[in-house]
Amino acid sequence: MRNKSQYKNNIIDLVILYFKYRNCYNQGFQKYYYFKNLIKHITNLDDLTFIRRIFEELLLKKIIEKKIICSSVRYRFNPYRKESINSPPYILTFN
Image 1 (cartoon, rainbow, N blue to C red):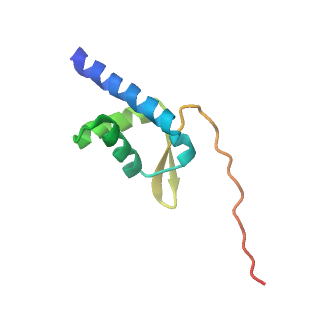
Image 2: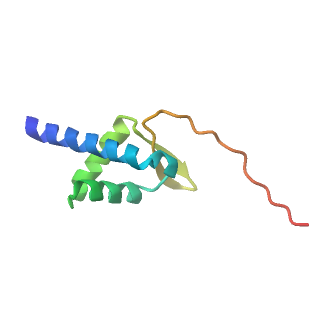
Image 3: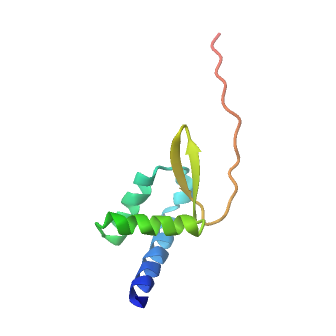
């Protein structure tokens, strides 16, 4: 049992390191599909339930934050705990 949890923790550390290397914070809020494909690429695993468990662990550690945008759930890799600044909406006027 210890080996499985240690393996999972090693994978999580690898994923965090790769996301930092890739500057995923600058990608903004993305759908789960984006992170699933990155984790799949990093770990070379095809087990979607294991990939989902890794993603959920990142959510529990608050390394990935969750936001609902236009009735769609989006996620952002935010290990730095930076607050997002909500900019006012752009208003276009045509004369």
